[in-house]
Length: 144
Image (cartoon, rainbow, N blue to C red; front, side, top):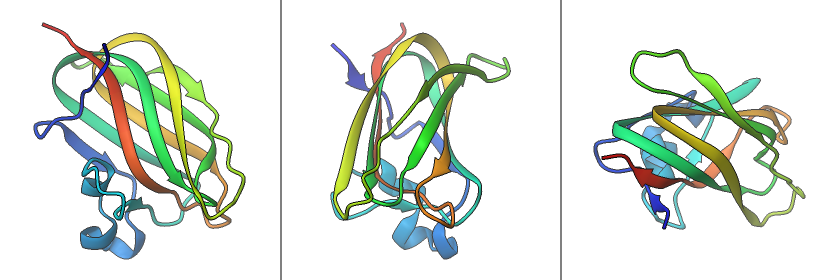
């Protein structure tokens, strides 16, 4: 059974935060399980989130919950192990109907053993390139 792999020891980084307001829109909100909070990127051509795990993991799914109108039409998941360079694991394609609704997506991931992931959001649906994500979950198994 797949479990959420992001833990308190996981180090996360994001491309930007709207108006640098990390208290209201910071990366911590990606993982806090609170339906009222979100990561809101600033504008730009693409946005990304990196995750460095405290141990090797085997990823099986990526779950993302976007705000309608602030998602991306194309995403890329990359990973690496140790000091290796990041390499592409899979491309994914969220569908945004531009509604005010929050849209949740689950993307299957080919089995990949990594300790670092980068999720890149390209071709954003917002004119200014902003992305709003309420939840980002990486599912799979921890390697022993």
